[in-house]
Length: 279
Image (cartoon, rainbow, N blue to C red; front, side, top):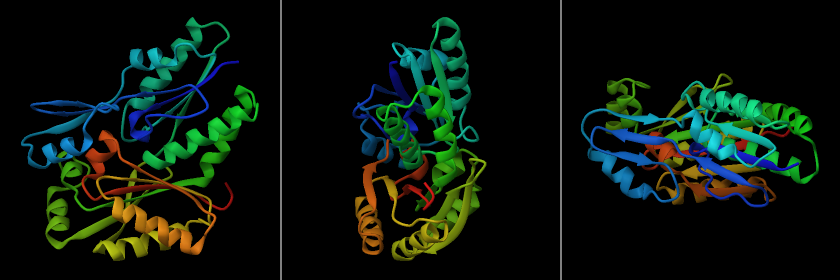
């Protein structure tokens, strides 16, 4: 039984070992240009462009046909998407999964609404891969993923809220105040898959202190951590070192954000997916 993992590009995963994989790109759109979130995009250049862009900016999710193309060739598909509360990517994948099963006799396609993005999506994908390699069948993996999701979490840190303000996620006044005062917003993905601000931290050190405290209070005991950063490798590495000082055997991986996550996290932002102790 041939398995395949598909994700939209908000997972920040471009290559995935040991199992067939495909990333379906989201797009970032301005009044003058469209950026396709794939391996060919110069993300740092995009981030710099967006600092001075005028007018509206937005994003566009993959369509049904793009998902169908990505599913092709597999008997069993697991598609992991950005939270359905922030994008239509999940809805498009669900429609594609239904069509794929109808047109491919005996095929199965299951869409995982991550209720998150970034590193938490990667954790889910890694869990699926491990179950496939362990020899579980489609139904067993589906049920295992549903249980695993109860024990993965996401925190984010933002230095700028400009793009969130442009898209109506926060008020322009709040975004401007954060920029002037040098405040980092620390938040979490809620159980419903929305962005939930938790703390206003003055400075990077305070943000890192608070992020570690939040992870511990939410059940982190040294499992997997997947850190995505937008042009901020220094803070990502500092967070890793702080966690390893407490949990030397923790499995921690750092990667740069792709275009979609960079668009919302902006320069200096971090997105951290992690497991709690019951994972």
